[in-house]
Amino acid sequence: MLYIVQPEPLALLKGRNYVIPDDIKYLAGYVLNHRLTLKREDRLRGVQASQVLEEVLVTIPVPVEKDGD
Image 1: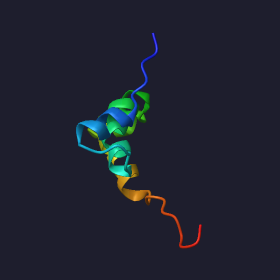
Image 2: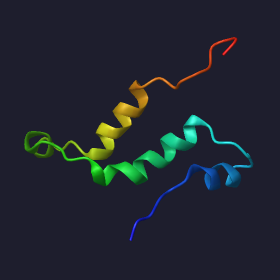
Image 3: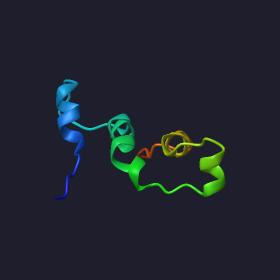
Image 4: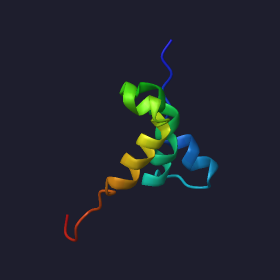
């Protein structure tokens, strides 16, 4: 069975009728952690998938519209 997590209910629970990038980032861990496969060396060093995902989410800038777009 396929489960899809959608950010809209989270936004509604937070009193908004629109989704913001932080909603996506919050849900990403629940959706993507199990999809990451770490190298053996990283696992032996104690690196966890959640750490890698957090690093990626912090590194990637949030897209914004430019004036006039």
